[in-house]
Image 1 (cartoon, rainbow, N blue to C red):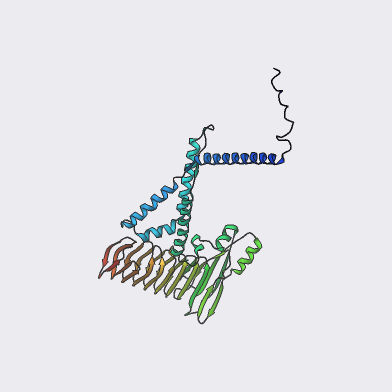
Image 2: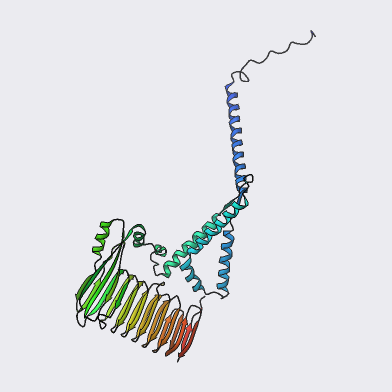
Length: 403
Protein backbone atom coordinates (compact mmCIF):
# COMPACT_ATOMS: atom_id res chain seq x y z
CA UNK A 1 0.00 0.00 0.00
CA UNK A 2 2.82 2.34 0.70
CA UNK A 3 4.18 1.90 -2.80
CA UNK A 4 1.05 3.47 -4.48
CA UNK A 5 1.21 7.19 -5.21
CA UNK A 6 -1.34 9.39 -3.48
CA UNK A 7 -4.51 10.33 -5.49
CA UNK A 8 -4.47 13.63 -7.42
CA UNK A 9 -6.01 16.70 -5.94
CA UNK A 10 -9.59 17.54 -7.17
CA UNK A 11 -9.82 20.25 -9.87
CA UNK A 12 -10.47 23.73 -8.63
CA UNK A 13 -14.10 24.97 -8.76
CA UNK A 14 -15.25 26.89 -11.85
CA UNK A 15 -15.17 26.29 -15.64
CA UNK A 16 -12.65 23.86 -17.14
CA UNK A 17 -9.20 25.14 -17.51
CA UNK A 18 -9.82 27.76 -14.98
CA UNK A 19 -10.27 31.21 -16.52
CA UNK A 20 -9.73 30.24 -20.21
CA UNK A 21 -12.20 32.71 -21.80
CA UNK A 22 -11.52 31.49 -25.36
CA UNK A 23 -12.64 28.01 -24.46
CA UNK A 24 -15.74 29.34 -22.78
CA UNK A 25 -16.70 31.39 -25.88
CA UNK A 26 -16.24 28.33 -28.12
CA UNK A 27 -18.49 26.24 -25.90
CA UNK A 28 -21.21 28.90 -25.91
CA UNK A 29 -21.09 29.14 -29.72
CA UNK A 30 -21.45 25.39 -30.05
CA UNK A 31 -24.44 25.39 -27.72
CA UNK A 32 -26.12 28.23 -29.69
CA UNK A 33 -25.47 26.39 -32.95
CA UNK A 34 -26.99 23.22 -31.55
CA UNK A 35 -30.10 25.12 -30.40
CA UNK A 36 -30.39 26.74 -33.83
CA UNK A 37 -30.15 23.36 -35.60
CA UNK A 38 -32.77 21.91 -33.28
CA UNK A 39 -35.18 24.83 -34.01
CA UNK A 40 -34.71 24.35 -37.75
CA UNK A 41 -35.36 20.65 -37.46
CA UNK A 42 -38.54 21.28 -35.48
CA UNK A 43 -39.71 23.85 -38.07
CA UNK A 44 -39.06 21.45 -40.96
CA UNK A 45 -40.90 18.68 -39.12
CA UNK A 46 -43.89 20.99 -38.53
CA UNK A 47 -43.95 22.00 -42.18
CA UNK A 48 -43.83 18.40 -43.30
CA UNK A 49 -46.65 17.50 -40.93
CA UNK A 50 -48.78 20.46 -42.09
CA UNK A 51 -48.09 19.59 -45.73
CA UNK A 52 -49.13 16.00 -45.12
CA UNK A 53 -52.47 17.23 -43.72
CA UNK A 54 -53.32 19.15 -46.91
CA UNK A 55 -55.49 17.75 -49.67
CA UNK A 56 -55.78 19.14 -53.18
CA UNK A 57 -59.15 20.49 -54.27
CA UNK A 58 -61.02 18.72 -57.04
CA UNK A 59 -61.76 22.13 -58.61
CA UNK A 60 -58.68 22.09 -60.84
CA UNK A 61 -59.41 18.74 -62.53
CA UNK A 62 -63.07 19.67 -63.02
CA UNK A 63 -62.10 22.95 -64.71
CA UNK A 64 -59.68 21.20 -67.07
CA UNK A 65 -62.21 18.49 -67.93
CA UNK A 66 -64.96 21.05 -68.62
CA UNK A 67 -62.72 23.24 -70.78
CA UNK A 68 -61.46 20.18 -72.67
CA UNK A 69 -65.01 18.94 -73.37
CA UNK A 70 -66.12 22.37 -74.64
CA UNK A 71 -63.13 22.72 -76.98
CA UNK A 72 -63.67 19.16 -78.19
CA UNK A 73 -67.30 19.95 -79.05
CA UNK A 74 -66.20 23.06 -80.93
CA UNK A 75 -63.43 21.20 -82.74
CA UNK A 76 -65.78 18.41 -83.86
CA UNK A 77 -68.47 20.85 -85.01
CA UNK A 78 -71.02 19.82 -82.37
CA UNK A 79 -70.96 23.31 -80.88
CA UNK A 80 -70.67 26.62 -82.70
CA UNK A 81 -67.69 28.68 -81.52
CA UNK A 82 -69.51 32.02 -81.71
CA UNK A 83 -72.41 30.59 -79.68
CA UNK A 84 -69.97 29.39 -77.00
CA UNK A 85 -68.19 32.77 -76.76
CA UNK A 86 -71.49 34.67 -76.78
CA UNK A 87 -72.83 32.50 -73.94
CA UNK A 88 -69.60 32.83 -71.96
CA UNK A 89 -69.53 36.63 -72.43
CA UNK A 90 -73.01 36.82 -70.97
CA UNK A 91 -72.87 34.26 -68.14
CA UNK A 92 -69.17 34.04 -67.17
CA UNK A 93 -69.84 34.92 -63.47
CA UNK A 94 -71.45 31.46 -63.17
CA UNK A 95 -67.88 30.11 -63.27
CA UNK A 96 -67.04 31.86 -59.99
CA UNK A 97 -70.31 30.74 -58.42
CA UNK A 98 -69.64 27.12 -59.40
CA UNK A 99 -66.07 27.25 -58.07
CA UNK A 100 -67.32 28.60 -54.74
CA UNK A 101 -70.01 25.91 -54.49
CA UNK A 102 -67.47 23.12 -55.12
CA UNK A 103 -65.11 24.47 -52.46
CA UNK A 104 -67.99 24.84 -49.99
CA UNK A 105 -69.10 21.24 -50.58
CA UNK A 106 -65.52 20.01 -50.06
CA UNK A 107 -65.31 21.92 -46.78
CA UNK A 108 -68.62 20.50 -45.59
CA UNK A 109 -67.52 16.97 -46.51
CA UNK A 110 -64.24 17.35 -44.60
CA UNK A 111 -66.07 18.67 -41.55
CA UNK A 112 -68.42 15.70 -41.63
CA UNK A 113 -65.68 13.09 -42.09
CA UNK A 114 -63.38 14.57 -39.43
CA UNK A 115 -65.83 14.93 -36.58
CA UNK A 116 -63.47 13.03 -34.23
CA UNK A 117 -61.32 15.58 -32.40
CA UNK A 118 -58.62 12.99 -31.69
CA UNK A 119 -57.84 12.60 -35.39
CA UNK A 120 -55.78 15.13 -37.37
CA UNK A 121 -57.83 17.55 -39.45
CA UNK A 122 -57.07 17.72 -43.13
CA UNK A 123 -57.29 21.01 -45.01
CA UNK A 124 -58.09 21.60 -48.67
CA UNK A 125 -55.78 23.80 -50.67
CA UNK A 126 -56.32 25.65 -53.95
CA UNK A 127 -53.09 25.50 -55.90
CA UNK A 128 -51.53 28.51 -57.54
CA UNK A 129 -52.17 27.04 -60.98
CA UNK A 130 -55.91 26.72 -60.34
CA UNK A 131 -56.07 30.25 -58.95
CA UNK A 132 -54.22 31.59 -62.02
CA UNK A 133 -56.62 29.69 -64.32
CA UNK A 134 -59.64 31.20 -62.55
CA UNK A 135 -58.09 34.65 -62.84
CA UNK A 136 -57.46 34.22 -66.57
CA UNK A 137 -61.00 32.94 -67.17
CA UNK A 138 -62.44 35.88 -65.22
CA UNK A 139 -60.41 38.45 -67.18
CA UNK A 140 -61.42 36.72 -70.42
CA UNK A 141 -65.08 36.91 -69.42
CA UNK A 142 -64.79 40.65 -68.72
CA UNK A 143 -63.11 41.26 -72.09
CA UNK A 144 -65.67 39.21 -74.04
CA UNK A 145 -68.54 40.90 -72.19
CA UNK A 146 -67.13 44.33 -73.03
CA UNK A 147 -66.74 43.46 -76.71
CA UNK A 148 -70.19 41.86 -76.82
CA UNK A 149 -71.80 44.99 -75.38
CA UNK A 150 -69.86 47.27 -77.66
CA UNK A 151 -67.79 48.74 -74.82
CA UNK A 152 -64.39 47.41 -75.78
CA UNK A 153 -62.82 50.83 -75.19
CA UNK A 154 -63.42 50.44 -71.47
CA UNK A 155 -63.00 46.96 -70.03
CA UNK A 156 -64.61 47.96 -66.74
CA UNK A 157 -67.86 48.27 -68.60
CA UNK A 158 -67.83 44.49 -68.81
CA UNK A 159 -68.70 44.61 -65.12
CA UNK A 160 -71.42 47.20 -65.83
CA UNK A 161 -69.80 49.62 -63.41
CA UNK A 162 -70.82 53.27 -63.71
CA UNK A 163 -71.35 56.30 -61.53
CA UNK A 164 -75.11 55.88 -61.85
CA UNK A 165 -74.99 52.29 -60.59
CA UNK A 166 -72.88 53.34 -57.63
CA UNK A 167 -75.26 56.17 -56.80
CA UNK A 168 -78.25 53.82 -56.99
CA UNK A 169 -76.50 51.35 -54.70
CA UNK A 170 -75.31 53.89 -52.13
CA UNK A 171 -78.16 56.40 -52.19
CA UNK A 172 -81.81 56.42 -51.15
CA UNK A 173 -84.48 56.59 -53.83
CA UNK A 174 -86.41 59.87 -54.14
CA UNK A 175 -89.30 60.05 -56.63
CA UNK A 176 -91.26 62.97 -58.05
CA UNK A 177 -93.42 63.76 -61.08
CA UNK A 178 -93.72 66.72 -63.40
CA UNK A 179 -96.28 67.52 -66.10
CA UNK A 180 -95.79 69.79 -69.10
CA UNK A 181 -98.17 70.71 -71.93
CA UNK A 182 -98.06 73.22 -74.76
CA UNK A 183 -99.40 73.74 -78.25
CA UNK A 184 -97.74 71.66 -80.92
CA UNK A 185 -96.82 73.79 -83.98
CA UNK A 186 -98.46 72.65 -87.18
CA UNK A 187 -96.21 70.81 -89.67
CA UNK A 188 -93.45 70.53 -87.07
CA UNK A 189 -91.30 67.58 -86.22
CA UNK A 190 -90.43 66.36 -82.77
CA UNK A 191 -87.03 65.31 -81.39
CA UNK A 192 -86.42 63.85 -77.94
CA UNK A 193 -83.11 62.92 -76.31
CA UNK A 194 -83.07 61.19 -72.92
CA UNK A 195 -79.65 60.25 -71.49
CA UNK A 196 -81.05 57.95 -68.78
CA UNK A 197 -84.61 56.67 -68.59
CA UNK A 198 -87.38 55.16 -70.70
CA UNK A 199 -89.20 57.04 -73.45
CA UNK A 200 -92.83 56.24 -74.34
CA UNK A 201 -94.37 58.16 -77.26
CA UNK A 202 -97.93 57.85 -78.50
CA UNK A 203 -99.61 59.74 -81.34
CA UNK A 204 -102.94 59.92 -79.54
CA UNK A 205 -103.13 63.65 -78.76
CA UNK A 206 -106.42 65.04 -80.17
CA UNK A 207 -106.11 68.65 -78.98
CA UNK A 208 -103.07 69.65 -81.13
CA UNK A 209 -100.92 69.81 -78.01
CA UNK A 210 -97.95 67.88 -76.74
CA UNK A 211 -98.31 66.42 -73.26
CA UNK A 212 -95.20 65.38 -71.37
CA UNK A 213 -95.14 63.44 -68.11
CA UNK A 214 -91.78 63.06 -66.35
CA UNK A 215 -91.26 60.52 -63.58
CA UNK A 216 -88.03 61.44 -61.81
CA UNK A 217 -85.88 59.17 -59.68
CA UNK A 218 -82.99 60.63 -57.69
CA UNK A 219 -80.61 58.47 -55.67
CA UNK A 220 -78.90 60.32 -52.82
CA UNK A 221 -78.62 60.33 -49.01
CA UNK A 222 -79.66 63.95 -48.64
CA UNK A 223 -83.20 65.28 -49.07
CA UNK A 224 -81.94 68.73 -49.99
CA UNK A 225 -79.64 67.26 -52.62
CA UNK A 226 -82.55 65.21 -53.98
CA UNK A 227 -84.72 68.35 -54.32
CA UNK A 228 -81.90 70.23 -56.04
CA UNK A 229 -81.26 67.44 -58.53
CA UNK A 230 -84.99 66.99 -59.21
CA UNK A 231 -85.32 70.66 -60.12
CA UNK A 232 -82.32 70.45 -62.46
CA UNK A 233 -83.83 67.34 -64.07
CA UNK A 234 -86.70 69.34 -65.58
CA UNK A 235 -87.23 68.86 -69.34
CA UNK A 236 -86.11 71.56 -71.73
CA UNK A 237 -88.53 72.11 -74.65
CA UNK A 238 -87.37 74.39 -77.48
CA UNK A 239 -88.65 75.27 -80.96
CA UNK A 240 -85.89 75.81 -83.49
CA UNK A 241 -86.32 75.87 -87.25
CA UNK A 242 -89.84 74.45 -87.19
CA UNK A 243 -88.77 71.49 -85.05
CA UNK A 244 -89.79 70.96 -81.43
CA UNK A 245 -86.93 69.47 -79.39
CA UNK A 246 -87.12 67.95 -75.91
CA UNK A 247 -83.94 67.30 -73.93
CA UNK A 248 -83.24 66.03 -70.43
CA UNK A 249 -80.01 67.06 -68.65
CA UNK A 250 -77.57 64.32 -67.71
CA UNK A 251 -77.13 64.32 -63.92
CA UNK A 252 -75.32 61.62 -61.98
CA UNK A 253 -77.54 59.42 -59.85
CA UNK A 254 -80.78 60.39 -61.60
CA UNK A 255 -83.26 58.85 -64.01
CA UNK A 256 -86.20 60.41 -65.89
CA UNK A 257 -88.90 58.25 -67.51
CA UNK A 258 -90.82 60.18 -70.19
CA UNK A 259 -94.41 59.57 -71.30
CA UNK A 260 -95.31 61.74 -74.28
CA UNK A 261 -98.50 62.13 -76.34
CA UNK A 262 -98.50 64.28 -79.47
CA UNK A 263 -100.38 64.56 -82.78
CA UNK A 264 -100.09 61.39 -84.86
CA UNK A 265 -98.91 63.23 -87.98
CA UNK A 266 -95.72 64.63 -86.37
CA UNK A 267 -92.42 63.15 -87.60
CA UNK A 268 -90.48 61.86 -84.59
CA UNK A 269 -86.78 61.34 -83.86
CA UNK A 270 -86.15 59.70 -80.49
CA UNK A 271 -82.86 58.73 -78.82
CA UNK A 272 -82.28 57.04 -75.45
CA UNK A 273 -78.82 56.31 -74.10
CA UNK A 274 -79.81 54.13 -71.11
CA UNK A 275 -83.46 53.17 -71.32
CA UNK A 276 -86.19 51.48 -73.36
CA UNK A 277 -88.14 53.13 -76.17
CA UNK A 278 -91.85 52.52 -76.87
CA UNK A 279 -93.57 54.22 -79.81
CA UNK A 280 -97.15 53.64 -80.94
CA UNK A 281 -99.95 55.10 -83.09
CA UNK A 282 -97.91 57.34 -85.40
CA UNK A 283 -98.74 58.27 -89.00
CA UNK A 284 -95.44 59.94 -89.83
CA UNK A 285 -91.77 59.02 -90.34
CA UNK A 286 -90.01 57.68 -87.26
CA UNK A 287 -86.32 57.39 -86.41
CA UNK A 288 -85.28 55.55 -83.23
CA UNK A 289 -81.84 55.10 -81.61
CA UNK A 290 -81.33 52.95 -78.50
CA UNK A 291 -77.81 52.62 -77.15
CA UNK A 292 -78.56 50.49 -74.05
CA UNK A 293 -82.21 49.52 -74.09
CA UNK A 294 -85.03 47.73 -75.91
CA UNK A 295 -87.22 49.08 -78.71
CA UNK A 296 -90.94 48.36 -79.12
CA UNK A 297 -92.93 49.75 -82.08
CA UNK A 298 -96.68 49.32 -82.61
CA UNK A 299 -99.12 50.82 -85.10
CA UNK A 300 -96.74 52.92 -87.21
CA UNK A 301 -97.85 53.85 -90.74
CA UNK A 302 -94.85 55.91 -91.83
CA UNK A 303 -91.31 54.77 -92.70
CA UNK A 304 -89.27 53.62 -89.73
CA UNK A 305 -85.49 53.60 -89.23
CA UNK A 306 -84.10 52.02 -86.07
CA UNK A 307 -80.56 51.88 -84.69
CA UNK A 308 -79.86 49.27 -82.00
CA UNK A 309 -76.41 49.62 -80.48
CA UNK A 310 -76.21 47.00 -77.76
CA UNK A 311 -75.92 43.23 -78.03
CA UNK A 312 -78.31 42.70 -75.10
CA UNK A 313 -81.09 44.88 -76.54
CA UNK A 314 -84.28 43.38 -77.98
CA UNK A 315 -86.42 44.88 -80.74
CA UNK A 316 -90.05 44.20 -81.59
CA UNK A 317 -92.24 45.78 -84.27
CA UNK A 318 -95.94 45.01 -84.85
CA UNK A 319 -98.48 46.45 -87.27
CA UNK A 320 -96.03 48.66 -89.15
CA UNK A 321 -97.20 49.54 -92.66
CA UNK A 322 -94.27 51.66 -93.88
CA UNK A 323 -90.76 50.53 -94.82
CA UNK A 324 -88.81 49.25 -91.81
CA UNK A 325 -85.02 49.51 -91.62
CA UNK A 326 -83.11 47.97 -88.71
CA UNK A 327 -79.39 48.61 -88.29
CA UNK A 328 -76.72 47.92 -85.67
CA UNK A 329 -76.41 45.00 -83.28
CA UNK A 330 -78.90 43.51 -80.89
CA UNK A 331 -80.21 40.35 -79.31
CA UNK A 332 -83.73 39.04 -79.97
CA UNK A 333 -85.81 40.56 -82.78
CA UNK A 334 -89.54 39.97 -83.31
CA UNK A 335 -91.40 41.36 -86.35
CA UNK A 336 -95.03 40.59 -87.14
CA UNK A 337 -97.92 41.91 -89.27
CA UNK A 338 -95.79 44.22 -91.39
CA UNK A 339 -96.91 45.59 -94.74
CA UNK A 340 -93.86 47.36 -96.15
CA UNK A 341 -90.40 46.08 -97.03
CA UNK A 342 -88.06 45.04 -94.22
CA UNK A 343 -84.29 45.51 -94.25
CA UNK A 344 -82.06 44.28 -91.42
CA UNK A 345 -78.29 44.67 -91.40
CA UNK A 346 -75.72 44.28 -88.65
CA UNK A 347 -75.19 41.58 -86.02
CA UNK A 348 -78.03 40.03 -84.03
CA UNK A 349 -76.94 37.48 -81.44
CA UNK A 350 -80.29 36.12 -80.31
CA UNK A 351 -83.25 34.72 -82.20
CA UNK A 352 -84.91 36.63 -85.04
CA UNK A 353 -88.60 35.84 -85.54
CA UNK A 354 -90.57 37.04 -88.61
CA UNK A 355 -94.30 36.50 -88.94
CA UNK A 356 -96.77 37.64 -91.61
CA UNK A 357 -94.74 40.15 -93.58
CA UNK A 358 -96.28 41.31 -96.86
CA UNK A 359 -93.28 43.15 -98.26
CA UNK A 360 -89.88 41.86 -99.38
CA UNK A 361 -87.38 40.95 -96.67
CA UNK A 362 -83.61 41.43 -96.68
CA UNK A 363 -81.70 40.07 -93.70
CA UNK A 364 -77.92 40.55 -93.79
CA UNK A 365 -75.41 39.86 -91.03
CA UNK A 366 -71.81 38.67 -90.90
CA UNK A 367 -73.12 35.06 -90.76
CA UNK A 368 -76.45 35.10 -92.62
CA UNK A 369 -77.71 36.58 -95.88
CA UNK A 370 -81.41 35.94 -96.47
CA UNK A 371 -83.83 37.43 -99.00
CA UNK A 372 -87.37 36.50 -100.02
CA UNK A 373 -90.37 38.25 -101.53
CA UNK A 374 -93.06 37.71 -98.90
CA UNK A 375 -93.78 35.75 -95.74
CA UNK A 376 -97.29 34.43 -95.19
CA UNK A 377 -96.23 32.19 -92.30
CA UNK A 378 -93.23 32.56 -90.00
CA UNK A 379 -89.47 32.16 -89.93
CA UNK A 380 -86.94 31.79 -87.11
CA UNK A 381 -83.27 32.61 -87.55
CA UNK A 382 -80.70 31.66 -84.93
CA UNK A 383 -76.97 31.00 -84.78
CA UNK A 384 -77.25 27.40 -85.87
CA UNK A 385 -80.26 27.08 -88.18
CA UNK A 386 -83.10 28.69 -90.13
CA UNK A 387 -86.65 27.35 -90.06
CA UNK A 388 -89.39 28.81 -92.28
CA UNK A 389 -92.98 28.11 -93.29
CA UNK A 390 -95.00 29.71 -96.09
CA UNK A 391 -92.17 31.88 -97.41
CA UNK A 392 -92.78 33.14 -100.96
CA UNK A 393 -89.78 33.20 -103.30
CA UNK A 394 -87.56 33.83 -105.01
CA UNK A 395 -85.59 32.82 -101.91
CA UNK A 396 -81.87 33.46 -101.45
CA UNK A 397 -80.18 32.16 -98.33
CA UNK A 398 -76.61 31.90 -97.07
CA UNK A 399 -75.39 31.08 -93.57
CA UNK A 400 -71.70 30.95 -92.70
CA UNK A 401 -70.31 28.19 -90.53
CA UNK A 402 -68.32 29.26 -87.49
CA UNK A 403 -64.76 28.02 -87.28
